[in-house]
Length: 247
Image (tube, rainbow, N blue to C red; front, top):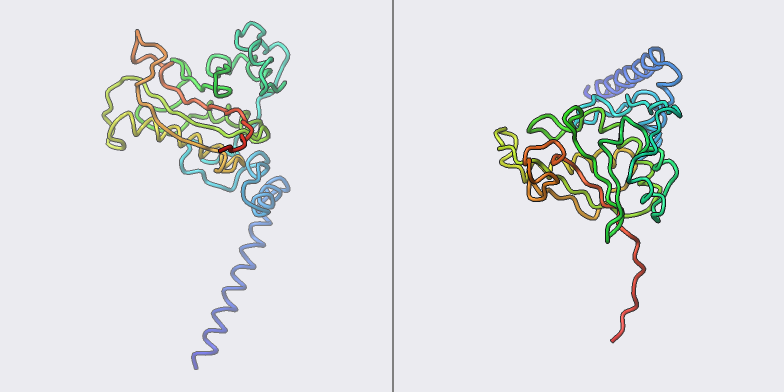
C-alpha cells in the first residue's frame, strides 16, 4: 500500500522540478542563462560574477549581488599623470600596465594607494570624507570600494602572490552592539575584503593572514577620527625562493 505512494511522490517531485526548470528558462534571457551556466560549471569561476547578474547572494556585502557591478568606461581624459605613486609602481616587480592605468583614473586615485615596502607591494584602500568605505560601525563594503576590488581581484589572482589583509579603524568610540570594540570591527572589515576576493576567484590558500589593528596605526595622528585612518591594506608578498637546509 505504501509503495505506490512513494512512487507517486517521486513522480510529482520530478514533474515539479521539470516545470520549475521550464519556467526559469522561459523568464530568463540569453545573458542570464549564460551567467547561470557559468555559475554551475564550477566554483571559483570569475565569469560567474562578471557576466550578467550574479545568481549568488553575497550576504557579507552591501550589494545584493556582486554580479551587478559593471566595469567603468575608461576615457583618455579621465587619466591623471600627476599621481606620485605611479612612477614607483612602474618600476616594481608587480608592475602591470592595467594597474598603472587604474591608479590614474580620477574616481579612484584618492582612495587607492600603492607603494613598495620591504615585504612586497602595499595596496591601501583608503576612505575619504566624500567616499566612505563602510557605514559607521559596520563591516560591509560600499559599492564604490567593491568596484575597486572588482578591478583589482583578477590582477591579484593572476599575479600568483600570497596576500596579507589588515584592517584599520579610526579612534571613534565604538557604540554598536554588533562588535565589542574597534579591534573586532577592523578584523571583520578585513575579512569582508577577503570574502569579496574569494568570490572573485582567489583561492583562500592565497591569504596568509587576515588581521585587525583597530586604531593602533593611524595615518593621521593629529586627527584620530580622520577618514583616512579608516582603511584596509592588501600586502602582496614577495615570492622568496626556498633556501636549502644545511647542518
